[in-house]
Length: 147
Image 1 (cartoon, rainbow, N blue to C red):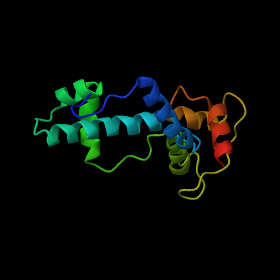
Image 2: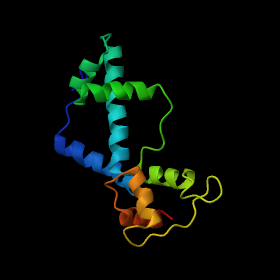
Image 3: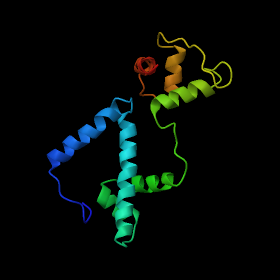
Image 4: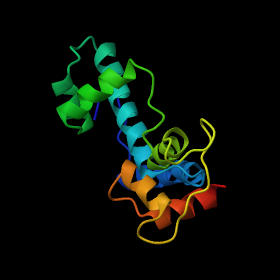
């Protein structure tokens, strides 16, 4: 815990966090979105605290304070200074592949209707281009749920 941070009962902190997260999670964010944002904020807050105390800021110190591994801290520091990659989310990556891969799009940037039943369906092949661990049925369900 950083100097100057008040001590609060962990049960109270957990309940406060739940209250904050509930409306966010109802907005179709994923655990990956939440973790990504949390990691960025942890590093930002730790950097600010070190600077306020006129302390040296480096990946090792940030790693100890945040609980993140040094390579992750370094990656976050690099991406913080560059434009954010909006394709990190698996669904966004599938949609991007669908829109941009000539095998799956109609007019440039427009996804076309794909076969989705069976082991050799076009939609299954599309999903496997993004990740071999994606279940195409689950991806389709989530696309339909989100409209």
